[in-house]
Image (tube, rainbow over all chains, first blue to last red; front, side, top):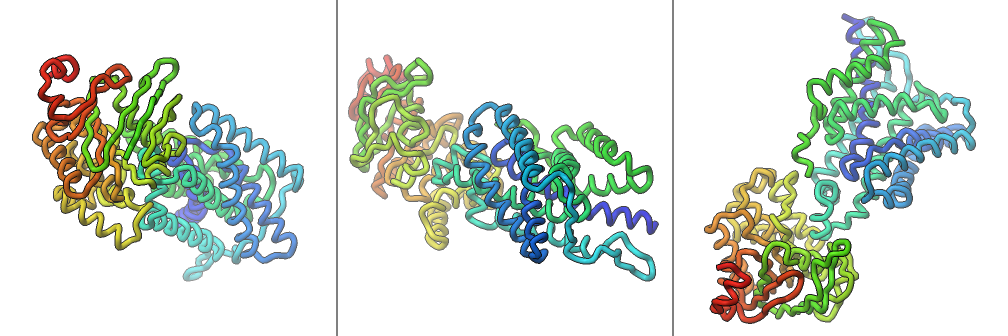
Length: 292
Length: 235
């Protein structure tokens, strides 16, 4: 029983990070119908920037702020410069562009920072808390990860549902032409959407860095799991991204704990297939009929 | 108010509008009639900036609109209600309405304008928190019209509001357009295939045929001309 609780706790922590990556992908998919394969590269670069700050003696919090700020800027710049020209082109163009960008970022990071992974400090202690004499697989740092992701999700929900800006963002995503007729500057909304997504992604990068280390290819697995989580959730739904991330996190934790850690990737594939067999549009996906 | 001159718009090689000129006088309801494919929708989409013409101009009080993006043309006081309304079904009724005035009003002013729309279309008030997807066709048209009115435009472009609606609802919508014209001095450019109901409320009308203006004149005169009605309007 303790083992089960522990595996679940570990699953929730990693699931929150998958959910964050998934959320970054969903935000972009919703607004531009582009699957951002460059997301892994983007969060890798922003995490490297954070590492540079830490390496230069900066505090964890300054480094985190640097990662978030650079994510915001990087997302906006990439949308304006690279994505804008392919937005109204066939979807394959965007796929190639984001994949190319991913390769470019990865190679560029290797040239600037080298290929050897660097360690990254956690925000808080990583010794498991003990409750009534049993040590749990839940450290203060894990609580911070869960809290930080939760806070971002609440902030995004408030932004999208409660504010005028959020209404504009949603209108631009759902019906760009109608939004323009109502005076929404859709181009700006798309830039902002990418910036927000990259910000969310950069948070995931910093949160996962202590366990995967910082290197050009260290985040590939996180992106794959984040992508899996997004598809499980339906790719269209922020709530789905979060639920998908948590489900996947727990499923992988059980696979690793009860079977073998070698089977984790296979477990992700199995979870993906199982969900898509039952619900081809993902758990929270819209029926394709709605998308005109 | 609106002066369209020699407008040529083409999708590929085929011109949809082939040298259309018309003027929309201030404070009047002008109807553009014509069959499917006559270029009516193209005309409205060009005026509101969704399409770029190959040549020609559409000037609002002397200012050419054909080089401005749609989101800037709205800010000059032109509201476009697209075919079937263009209600954003994923948003609630209230959110759709707020969106209509967001670029123009502060919170309190916006709330007052939205309240006025609810007064004009009471069925919307009962469904304000519902998703627009749950509305009937007539209610969607009301919402689309109301959403355009929230910004208090000077020129309202309406594209086939009668499409797919019951005759009773069509009559209601037409009556509202007429009333807006009379009471608030709004200028309306109404595109309709349903010539009979459009002529019943319009001041002036013109008939588009194969991308150019075939006939133009007083609505009453057009409605009274039997030969014209048979040739172009089908009633």
